[in-house]
Image (cartoon, rainbow, N blue to C red; front, side, top):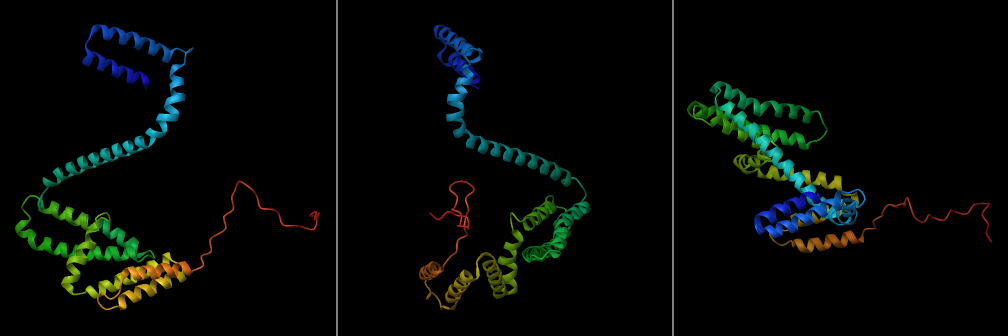
Length: 276
């Protein structure tokens, strides 16, 4: 490592200084440094490692090395995926329109079908709701595609747009179906009240799952008081302070932690214990 740094400094001395006398002095110093580093009797490289690299540079450079490694892996994977997708898109652009339609429908149905069957076979309700929302939105997208593909199907990029929209609706990282469902379909159907009721039920289930019964009862009363107030009468800050006071009044029992090392508790007296 240090040899590489000295080699780069040699290039800098040759290019920047450019004086023959400086080059001679530098090369002599460099010969002495390399001899000190590599000669077994001096062990200069070992001294540098023990006194500089390990105690000083290592702890400071390890976090930077992890970040750089993660960034390089992320860039590599992104470029590789982009190249693969670009090649697939080029191939997709040259296939017949009928086959493009089959591919577009397969992208929007095969994987969601498998996930929907898996979600229906589990006890969780969240994944059922997610895929039911997706199928509602994808059905509208399919109707639009079937309606406009007679006129727009021959335009390059029509089925590519359908596939990209389907991926946006499908993947959990985008949650596009949820956004379209809330912002477009629910207002068009006039079902905002039922959507709010569904969200309230999910919040209650999550609250009962994450909190113990006493804390859940306090939160439920605070939320009920907030919803019962007319207009802006309920002050959220006052409700927060009331919630904090109610929380502080609870007697929280912390679990007893036994330390694996350290001072041990004194043993309880037995019949053979010396009392004097």
